[in-house]
Amino acid sequence: MKKILIVDDEGMNLMSTKFILSNAGYDIVTAESGEEGINILKNDGIDLLLLDVEMPNMNGIETLELIRQDEEIANTRVLFLTASTSQDDMSDAVHLGAKGFIKKPCLPDELIKSVEKTLAERSKPLILVVDDEPMNHMMIKMVFEDIYRVKCVSSGEDAITFVKNRIPDLIILDLNMPVMNGQETYENIRKVENCLNIPVVFITAEDDEDTELELFKAGAMEFIKKPFIPEIMRERIRRILELKKLQDFLNDEVSRKTSDLVESNNKVNRLFDQLVSALSGAIDAKDSYTNGHSNRVADYSKEIAIRMGKNEEEARNVYNIAMLHDVGKIGIPNDIINKPGRLSDEEFEVIKSHTVKGWKILENISEFPELAIGAHWHHERYDGKGYPDGLAGDAIPEIARIVCVADCYDAMSSNRSYRDALPQDVVRGEIEKGMGTQFDPVIAKHMLNMIDEDVNYDMREK
Ligand SMILES: [Fe+2]
Image (cartoon, rainbow, N blue to C red; front, side, top):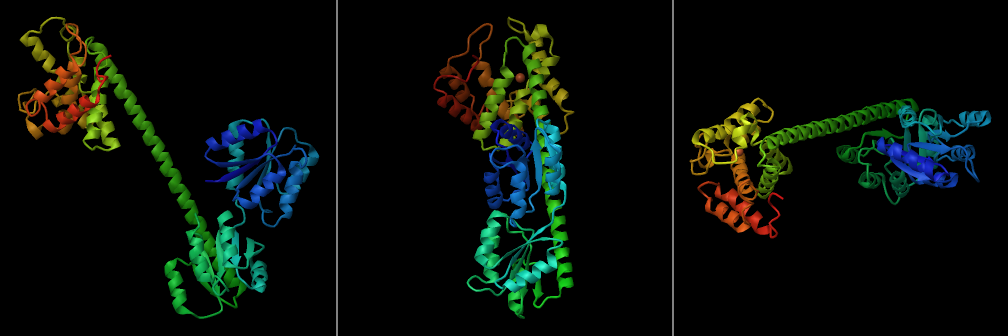
């Protein structure tokens, strides 16, 4: 994640800029003065500085002058944030290498676009040289300084301190150093957060093939023998950096694509949940006696599924299947569904057909075949005396056995036109009595546990 430092003396501006850029996926650090900003730049790996021009004590232009004079942070990419831009400020800023101006107040889209564009511009790669010989620092700087930023340190300890604050694009590491040699330094650098994949090139005056082989196996990129030939060294480093750039690009692309995929998957899931909810609302609206029945059966079924050890996705599927278990009632005439008195045998046969009708409605949803299964067989009984097919035991799909228990529980714990919800102990007794006959005994046991834990009898139609 790219890290942006915003320096602005006005708290409101800081907050709003931070809000916009955080939402756009950037890691944001803030400072209220130039001095504070420079300190952060030195200690934190900052990819871009957004700098206010008008500030008391030290204004933005003066701050940038100091930044450019400090070797450690001189290459910082800077965009100015300003309310009014004078010609003098502009020419000073350009002279100091600012990447551009963003006028305050600015639209979120404009701000994000400017930041994206500036961050996408190629900056010189940073090479960290770790060598105890000052002569080597000079030579390597001469070879590379026109094309890369080169930072030199003289010991393994200093190298580790450096990489904790800033991650270089490549490290050139002397193998023979006092106190902590190159190999130990290499191992320690790899333990620092985000440093495992920094390409490391060893330089050495000796021919030690065993060490060379060991370090190659541990992930070293290249060995260069001293004294080195500048052109060849330049070419080798250039190739390694090109390769790293390609790898970084691929990694970024993969993580961007992955997060796009996760987001679109979430969207599809939300849409599906909303459709299921709308459809189950239509079922419940049709049957005036069973207000909220589908939702409650879905809640109980999901809870049973969790107790059975199903994972989050499986439990979510059980919920949606249960939401639509009575979808076939849409195809049953209203006067039969809402008939207040006893049903005739013929009318009861029509009601029973909601299972097959539900199956027919849902069977074309090929991406989620269990939806149709729940609707089709939720009135089967464990002893084979249910409908529509008289399936028994494990021949009844598990999801249908779950919905069956939850469905019967809700029927007893809900109010009907001719009676109130049954007392909890009566409901419990019926579930217990049905174990092994009407219900799968294992699933019914989970329901009994849920009832026993429900000391206030909250699980019922309110
Ligand atoms: Fe049903």
